Length: 89
Image (cartoon, rainbow, N blue to C red; front, side, top):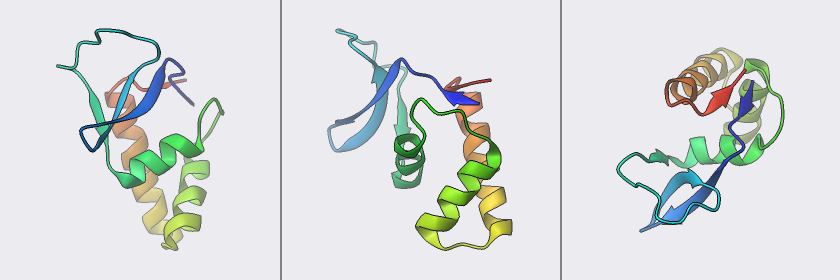
């Protein structure tokens, strides 16, 4: 898997949002807002191929959670990113 490279993380009105790089006049009716954990994962995986296990390890390192919980959380994050079309195979 890999994150879509044409997106950049921006802070807009105090919220973290993904927007198209270099896009002037972006249609902000369709934006993806990230919470702090999603932002951490997004910033940790730019332009890298990754697997579910890589996301699990990042969560364990950052939050000190158990492997079982990290697996669940990583799967949920990946699924939400796939649903938003932000990950390519």
